[in-house]
Image (cartoon, rainbow, N blue to C red; front, side, top):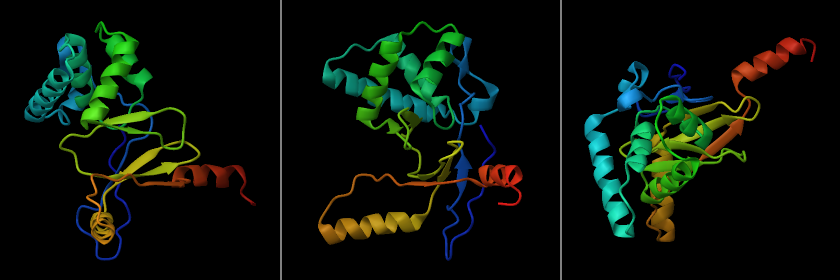
Length: 199
């Protein structure tokens, strides 16, 4: 995962207005025997994982679904990852570590986790859905490069203020929001300038 990148400071911001680049594939996860790699251990909170497992167990029981080892392995793999990932990355990562899980089970489990609010699903203007863990993580928004498809996360408390104001004004209990900003990142602009120095 790329090194966290600071977002330019807006006027009168909260200290929480920071961004984190999460483009490309996620190379974290856990090795054989479900041991998180050194790169991902910082993001794997054992207490949080236990809470997530309990919530997932309750959800499966409420829906009358089986509590299989494969489903919990997928949950653990997701919560050992950093940043966004697609189904193929998740499936390939588990297969590389010798974990026996079918692609259909990955899809079905992701649907259940999204339904429960434990995982968020994004399109980012592409046909390929991207996912990220969401339980216990701060609401954030995204800036997406239309050239290289890099995704940068950012938090700005003013957006929450707008959400609250709109909910009050229109008599809505707002549950969540999704804000994606699209543009061309600095790296892509620099590469374009280098290719066309006289443009």
